[in-house]
Length: 99
Image 1: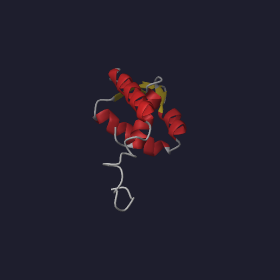
Image 2 (image 1 turned 90 degrees about the vertical axis):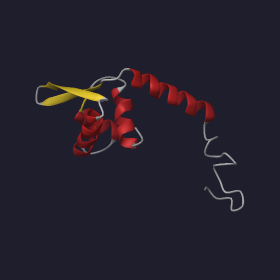
Image 3 (image 1 turned 135 degrees about the vertical axis):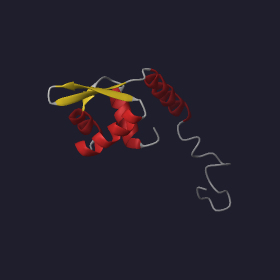
Image 4 (image 1 turned 180 degrees about the vertical axis):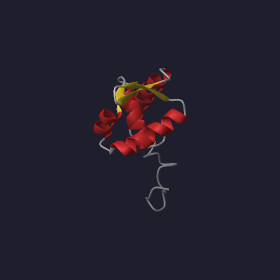
């Protein structure tokens, strides 16, 4: 889930099942790239697919993942950039630069 593309795919699938072409459009990447990421998510047990004509329809296999995403969004909305701006960990006080 640390990869931005896989996170974007999961976020899109949280709204409902989708074909690779739908996902490629949603994340703005080539179908081959999206397919590779879907393969990774499938190996992890986070998505599954079923045939739909000549295409496959992908869906999340773990409904709780939607709740995890919603909780993460709530935390980020509540804290904003506070973690990145933390004076102890976010920047080198002597140099004024991120550590």
